[in-house]
Image (cartoon, rainbow, N blue to C red; front, side, top):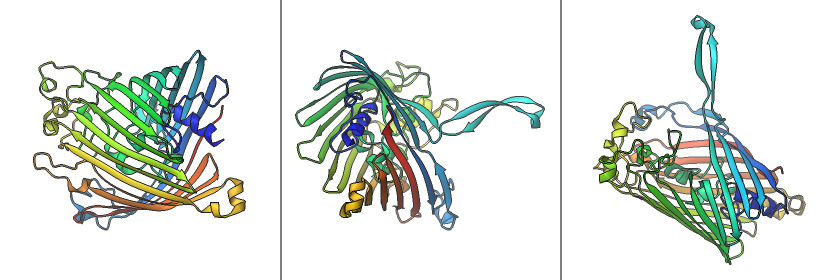
Length: 430
């Protein structure tokens, strides 16, 4: 049953979910000749944050040391998977994700305003098509996929489902500096040979107009248009090794140009002078054996021509959808490690019932503004974070999470403790 669930999941979302499953394995390998697969995952969380939520909590930290705590309910992700096997090696996969409850817009007749019709936003959040691809499988070592695909750079993008991390929310470091989940339209070649799994992708380039001081390239894959601009291109590569039982070790990277990848294409503008080269290197691992699960990653990123981004036309134009006034760093990094032990493994009845209770700890350190640009510093972006808590699995497909976490900032700022509780599922119905 374990391999049944995990094989489907890794295929539908293009990502691995345990130490022995990996990014783009076929969604249909598990179903014994069936054609249709339906599944999904979702999370419902509660947080109580014991720090200020005021907009100036970093620019005026001394004014907000004693601000009240604040609480939030949230549905970070609710996902529906669909997969279909056409036959003769052809298959299809898609993923629709509702983030933070989705978004709702409706027309209403406002009696308070003379019966006028108005369009109102009913709910925040996003609805995204994170995957939509056609695949031709020639052999286990040769699969060609085209469409909207997940870019498996880093641990978080390659293992983002809620049963693939201990914390209530996705690991914070990678989720801050990289797109998450990183998905773009392109072409992918992937396969397995021996103890290796590999994947190479050609993609539309990132858009430097979306880069920020507090998120680095996090929003760079998004487009405010009805299409993704592809004046510039990027490429990603991932290799995973499974030689040691229970252990997966992965290397991944990305390279592409980002300045000028916007609309309209100005042949004589900044894109003709500057490249905005984005280079990312990452190493990650998952160990799942002897009642232990240990995960870790390290990511480093470089952005060329970073000092030019503040002055790009679209960022200065008051009518554009970008308008970022801060500098962007030439470098960013994120490192993290978490470990959990299943204490129910020591009790025969609980072990045989399939229940699991992991006690875990996590530490991470990250900075989306790791190098000052033109001597400008944003010291509050350097974060060290610790978390510890419990994950209870009453059955394999469901987890109840609880944790205490704390962000440690530089001494000029206020640390940020919080308590988080969540429940999540991950499974397949057909």
